[in-house]
Amino acid sequence: MTMIEAAPVAFPELKRSLVREAARQASRTDGEGSVQVQLDPNQKIGNAKVFAVYGKGGIGKSTTSSNLSVAFSKLGKRVLQIGCDPKHDSTFTLTKKLMPTVIDVLESVDFHAEELRVEDFVFTGYNGVMCVEAGGPPAGTGCGGYVVGQTVKLLKEHHLLEETDVVIFDVLGDVVCGGFAAPLQHADRALIVTANDFDSIFAMNRIVQAIGAKARNYNVRLGGVIANRSAATDQIDKFNAQIGLKTMAHFPDLDVIRRSRLKKSTLFEMEYSPELEAVQKEYLRLAASLWLGTDPLICTPMKDRDIFDLLGFD
Image (cartoon, rainbow, N blue to C red; front, top):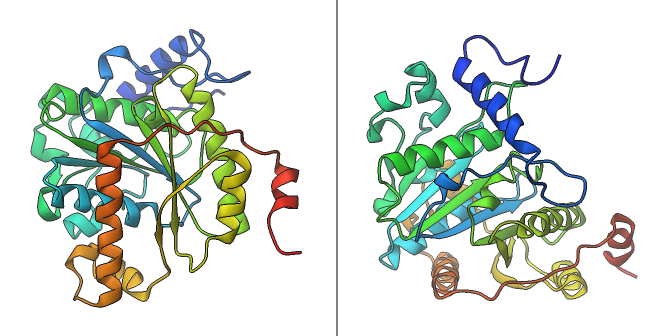
């Protein structure tokens, strides 16, 4: 039984969309030997600056995305953050609770998208950041690329992208299959969050490969690396120098960051301390740099064995 045949009867529109998607997939490939979910030309986001945040699972992508969203909003930009994880926990520090996903609300109206209102799936978070949780298809039945496409389609139909300055996609883990690579089809720059350790850097290398594949057919380019939860960056620096990457920002492993998640708050809402102020300034500096524009990075990913030999201590 194929993935499409297995789609449950309760999700007829999802199943039909998967069939349509499969029929389109053969039209163009992203990278040698790959067949991936394709972008509908009518779903282009428009004039906003679009960033897709990737990295190893649990590395702090949602923390990074949410605080970066606030930093952009503090610079006076109109910001939309789109969580692309079935756990739908990307935006809870902005909204103070878990919000329903696009798939949840579509299911509630039997996938009749015309019945939805903006307030059904777009929620206002801290400092005016607009928050959307795309969610994911039912387990084992579909592709995250469909969900991203449906989310962008809904946002366009409700004219929510016309006056948006910045869109941030916060993407599930380091899964770089066609579905969860779909935000790269919309993004101008891909940002990789990593720690100064072997597993995070190994995952980063795979993400670099995925971005390179998407860059063959779409406008996305590598923006750079965000070092997170790390006192030092020596291993990141070693890897960057080898493949042509650059570190754009560095956030140490501070307890205030852990506490901000437990308080369901962004770092810009936490009680003042000198170390917190330094982190806030780093987010503001990163947002300002990204807004002004960064040069695209052309990188050559490494072979797995070469990474193993490169990292570590003599």
